[in-house]
Image (cartoon, rainbow, N blue to C red; front, side, top):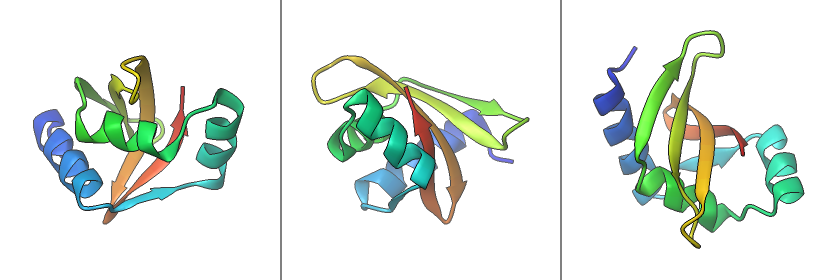
Length: 87
């Protein structure tokens, strides 16, 4: 497992290079919550915090959408960043 600062660096690097994959669940939640891919990318490129979630094996990334509103992205770092859900 990565340390939180290492995870932030990895997530940021993946997002900057366009290596983001969205799960079907994430796509559905994005549509329901009117969150765009650009919003997700912004939160992952400029995250404020990152916390490990051992039950899901995922990272809870807190950031902002393109409009500056808070956005939480639950992501797994599996080669590419896999976005599991957003809220």
